[in-house]
Length: 369
Image (tube, rainbow, N blue to C red; front, side, top):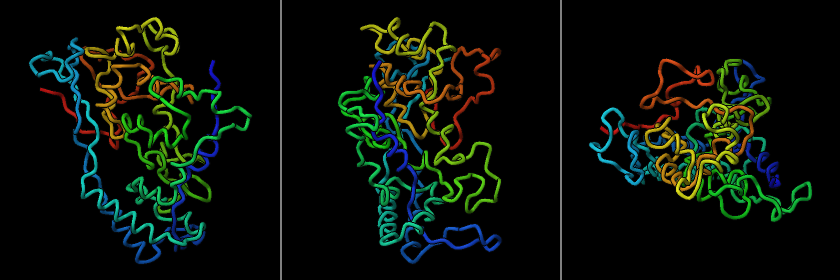
């Protein structure tokens, strides 16, 4: 069993806290509650630019059509008359690139932010408005990296605290077909690596949705009435993010117990399913004409790229669906309906699950007619 290197993990996790910048005042109703305020004209300019930065809804740019009942794996884009009338094709899409106008707004916001925070002290920085709603919901990666660029440049330790040399051990992700090269930091692997850019469309604020510097409690944040955090808060007590709605989406348990014909974790079970002709055993059940063909069409994933890459290796699937288990449970993914789905009897493990993706992450998808 390969040793798992923890080099750089602690430092990367510690640096994950967003700390951009601003001065504080006091709530008129409660002088003990700090409230973020703007600093000067530069701050106002930054706020104005940020407010304008509303990225257009995701439309299809690169697409891959998969006929739900077609067995012709070579037909990447089957014509409508090639597919079963009762089993329309699913269109997988990637998010579009920014338009020149959108990029210009980002550049303006970054320039204004740089002018605003120049020379600011750390105590003021901790309460900058970008750490709080609504600004944090619109912040671009470029704005975050104005102050946190070291997140992308830090490297894992050459020797871990336990004395293991990084060159002599394998991190879990280095055991996958989808990863090439030396160990890299958590943030780099999720935001900047070539593979991450192919399959994901993550941003800083996908995980970091704001926090309170004093108590790190979702029930005590500026701009929100006390003790009104939703049942699923944006972050949890003493945590910078809510792992149940971020990490767990990709790092939950591989639920082989719920799968007919799969008797063990995928790294073991795949040996009895895959061969030279079957490169991805997952598609034996989840390929064309199989279960759950409507997948990955959410704002934080590049669905079309995932489908294409998955034809070559099941590590494209396993790398997220259980390849790095942090939890003993798997994420309760929505059960989008599929052809021949049994709608009368729902397995116990699937009861209560949604039949559509969460509204904030939904993409514009459609079935080919």
